[in-house]
Image (cartoon, rainbow, N blue to C red; front, side):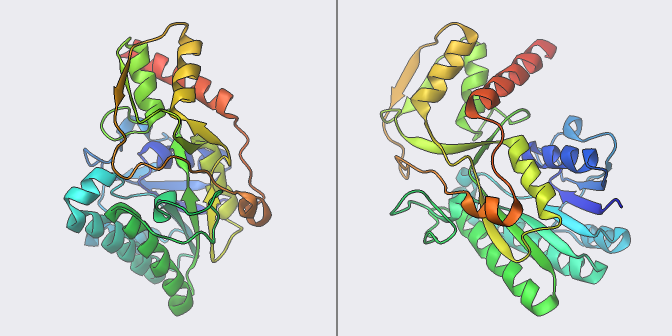
Length: 313
C-alpha cells in the first residue's frame, strides 16, 4: 500500500532525488519548496508525478497544508544549508532551521503524521579527535549551521518523548551527484566538474591532500526509503566510509575528460579539517543500508550529468 509522504525541500539537490526514489517505490509524494534563490530548489527538479506546493516551512500556510493533507511521513530537507550564510546571518539560519523544524513538528503532531525523517549533517561533529567518525563521536559544531542541525536532533528526541512522533535523523557526509548547484558554496565535485568542462582553472586550498567522505546522492535517497519502516528514534551516519582527497577528485575528473586545467593554489581556509570519514556500520545494522555506488562510478555519472546540462544550455 502506498504511503503518503511530504518532502520539504523536495525541489532541491538531495530532496529531488529522495522524491524520485519514493515515487519509483510506489509512494504518493507531495513536494514543498520555497524555491529560495540561495536554497538550490529548482522547478525543473520536481518529479512530474509529485504534487508541488511553493511554500516556506516557517509560515502558517505550511502548517495549514500539513493539517489538510495529513501525510503519514514527512521527509524534512528544507533548510538554510550554507555555512557561509549561517555565519553572516545566524538569526536567519536559526529561523529556517530551528523555527522551521518546530513548525514541521507541530503540524505533524496535529495532522497525525507517524514519522519525520530528518536530513541532518556531519557538520554537527566539527573537527573530530579520532577517526572514523561514528554516532558516538563528540559533537562540537564549528558553524551556526552545524549548531542548528545538532539542536534539531534534540527537538526530534523531545517531540518523540513528549508527543509520540517517531523520527530518524540521517547524518550525511559530503553528498554529491547530478543536480548539485556548481555555483556559490556547492560541493567541490560539482564546482570542479563545471570548471573543468569549461576549461577554466580550479582552486585547490592547502596541499590538496585533505580528505572528506563523499557519498553519492542516490545512495543517500535510498537511506530515506529504508527509513520509512526502520530506524525509529535513531540518529545514523550516512556516508561512504572512504576518505577521498581534493587532489584525487581533480585527477579523476581530468582523466575522465582527457585533459588537465590549471590549478590555482591557495592557503588553508580557516576551519578546514585535514581528514574526515565515517564508520557506517550502524546504518548497515539498523537500516540494512550500505553505499552501493562507488566513487569511480559516482563521479563519472556526475560528470556526464554536467556535460548534458552544459550542452542543453
